[in-house]
Image (cartoon, rainbow, N blue to C red; front, side, top):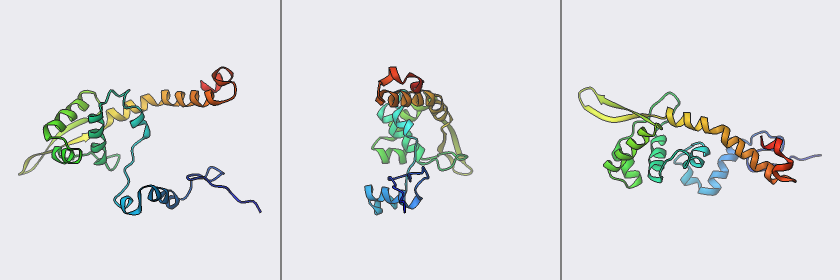
Length: 165
């Protein structure tokens, strides 16, 4: 009787492991109590493309905080500057300058919001510019991955140039 050997995420047949098995990996790394507070998902490419996006470390941390408030594709994020500032130890003015830099770079857009009878409230943020740039970078990242794989094969890039293209 044959038995399937499984890695951490995928069975040998390429079928994804059950979600509960994947969740247990996170719990093993961080602990159940920590994981009980939720999971935050961003594309790895966002982190890997930071330099190409021309985003400073402060801009990246503020961008990641804004993304934490974006829950569904058709929604917007609307955290206050004070909330972001408290989370990352920046003043409200520093957060405002950083957000304005992200807007100027075309990564996010912001819309002023107001509430009836209460006046101005937190801005609404959208990430269409960021998403568009990441999508435009994806072919380069794919090509770089293929090149990296080809370089590790016997004969390197010369023998495996078709693989790297």
